[in-house]
Length: 257
Image (spheres, rainbow, N blue to C red):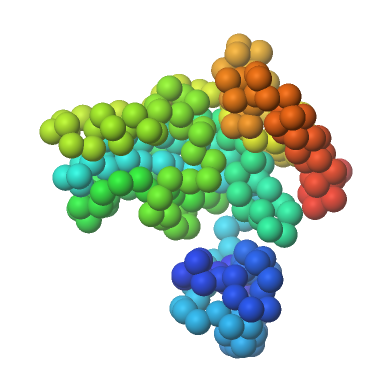
């Protein structure tokens, strides 16, 4: 038995025809002989590009890490920020998107330096976003992919004080070579905090998030006071959106007994 994840190499083409907008990620236990059957089905659905087969790495959402880097016009990495995923979305259309993250000391993961060297060797410029997973074996972290952009959840970076808009304005062509590695811990979430606390399986991570919340080191992308203060209709809509997350998680991610 070989546990594998089959996914499109070109994510932008993974929503054609019969897929109806569902992010096409197959996470299943398959025998080697079944892989041709699965890939044939994928191509029959209208997907036109290459497929990537990855060995399944065990562990839940809280085994995930996210790393965001910014490289200037000369290909020098100028900033990096590491986050520890608490929980991800599990609705069919949102599967895999980070829902809550605790930012961590970026220097705590040795793999970060290897990623910096790789980016500079490629002379990559702009934002890059890496999905990383801890396998459960001490020191064993697997890099799944690099997104050539900032991530959907990258307000976790700004929440630490490393404003991603300022990085572009101030470091793109300032001639500098310094690389800022974030060390500030902040609890970021775009679902209610209680949802993150309930569905995160690593209770030590939950305790850290609760402590950060108590210290005021917390940020929610949707609850931006200047945006909501004079707009009661929008405020009501945001609160309703957050309320609905309780039902979504109850439906798609039942609490492990």
